[in-house]
Length: 254
Image 1 (tube, rainbow, N blue to C red):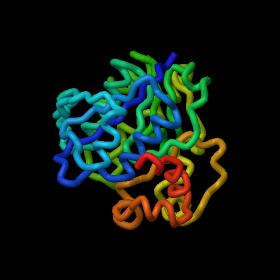
Image 2: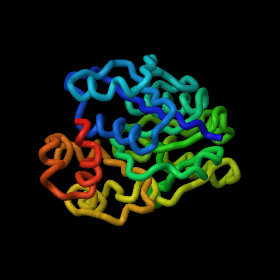
Image 3: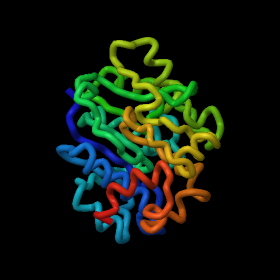
Image 4: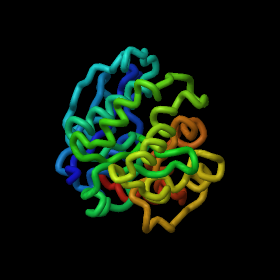
């Protein structure tokens, strides 16, 4: 069984701004929707600010040293360091990992916790490591970690090398050991992708067809300037969008 323990990884670069509202809502929605046994917050630089003070009591802090290499290959970007730490957490403890730019919509089904490893499709690109579920020391996670020796390319955002190890490789690995992973349809975790249509559906339209959605990914690296940076509780209350209407469920605690 996958334990009902959730993991977030954050703060591998120095924190110069208070924790953002969207990040606080990721943790808050996780706690309220899924009622986990525990939420581990893996970090190096601890967040600060009023929203951090709000969610800090909900989590167990785990300070980690960002890895500088894997199989002798230098890890230069904090996002790639976080990729390694999240997979290690699932290997060592097991549970559910979600990115901090996530909002939870419906409780995860009990059937998913009976699987050895769970990921969701990211369009035709592969399987996205922004949301994963795993038993402790699962075979898939072990094979994936070992596969970094050949799959990790480093690379810059926007290049094929950037997510070769985190999206393309697990998709290929799943084809070789299909019994060791359960793949959810895109709708479960990534209903709206990071193209212009997906971002519009998240932040401008109001999608109410969310019955089969467990969580939504916010694609903050792309959506930050236009949609997320100016997010406030007042805007969430007043503007009907897919994201805002979900976030409203948790505003009474903000």
